[in-house]
Length: 326
Length: 281
Image 1 (cartoon, rainbow over the protein chains, first blue to last red):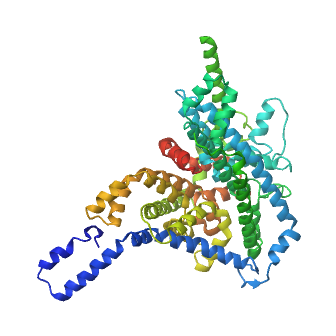
Image 2: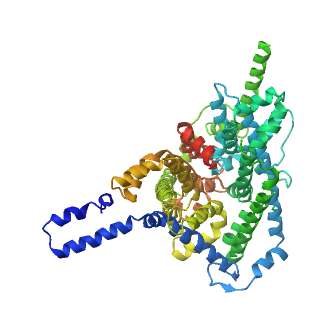
Image 3: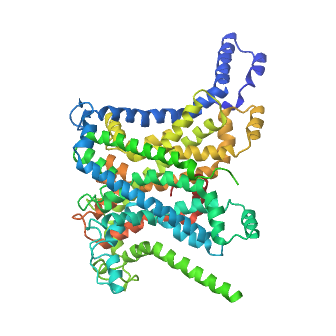
């Protein structure tokens, strides 16, 4: 069907020597076309893929898992309704659950602010454009592009191994080190934090683009008034960047809580669950121990936690985010 | 005064360069290690440049494991990434046009749903979707990795394109409408050509995400001949299946090659995508 000729056909139709029946048929098709081309119909048709996708791939699975979270279910046998047992067990009878919450919070609360500080610092440094700024920007940004890949996770695991490059470099610089970075309860989590901070590139780019939007006239005026570099930063740059910082903080916090691949490949939660991320624990419960009902409950609690954190961040927004415009 | 400024510049460049070097050092180390003889990688981990450049690691790695060569894994990854990307980009453009230019019942609700789908991350959906796909009988095939993307489920891309369409003057649509164009041909003949930059940006990100995607391959693909590179690499590196670190680094280097090539050639689109809509890299 050619959608392009709506409205032009009937005029010629009157002069054509067709029988009454086909004419009426044609009228019907015309009115169907007109119906399809109404703004409300078109909008409905265009958004249909998403409407279907949203229900079929998000709402239904979430609903299904809400039901399973109240069941004893292991994929193989049919689910048995047990009420809130899974949720109660989580908070009263699962030490590892509490441990993973602690580990995940620690990881997110340390790595996200560190990453943002790095991103902001480097953005400020690269703000000054020279001929090779593009090259520098690329070097700092490259790790974020590939940081989520399995290749980098494998590399990281080998770098921090006892005979890995980190210890070798330490040895070269005189420290006789064969420290098991990944085997120590205190340092293992830091290998993951360093990996996360290493990928500050995309936050840096966001900072760079909002730095460029701050009008130069503001700085000129400040200079005339006798403000130094430091007070320019704290009184102009930082306040005007707070919306960007806020956006970055929310997005990165959510992602921080959901880190999976890196932990799954590099540490598997070892040693002694000191690096066991929530998502990895959820995976283990559902697909390694086949406590799928329990895993579904864990997923819902995770969603609640993320929602809660986002809410807290939004609640603090009015105290420190500048929204007055330039 | 001038020399002082000169000195400052030099210090600046040395610092920025040095720090940049630390940033990329792990990657350079991996690439260099892949050219070292596999027995010498860890004994000479401290020195960057291999004494003798060898390509044997690539040859042994390429042979793969479980009777499947890496050529198969790469082909699988390309297939999944390309097909899923086509789906997500076109369906997102379609939906974005409707949401940006038409007023209809339920539009507000869909906007909220879109924002929700942006916020709702894959990891939370991991178990719910697995249970659902299992009910549908999709587990063990590529269907969970591809079909959902044909329904514009990545809100980020819809959002990106709505922003882009909002920047296109409505007069264009109006003029086309007066000339007898329907909404559908406005989309096909006017919008699609105009939003190509946004579609390219979305394609790049989608391709890289699908290429790196490890979690869904881990959940849904259970036949070694169907593994994508990410999953194959993980199993290749597991202790027991291989302790040939040279081959492992060689394959790891190859697996990041597509992302690096995209990064070098299409950096402009990447930077734009991140700085205008906060897509994460």
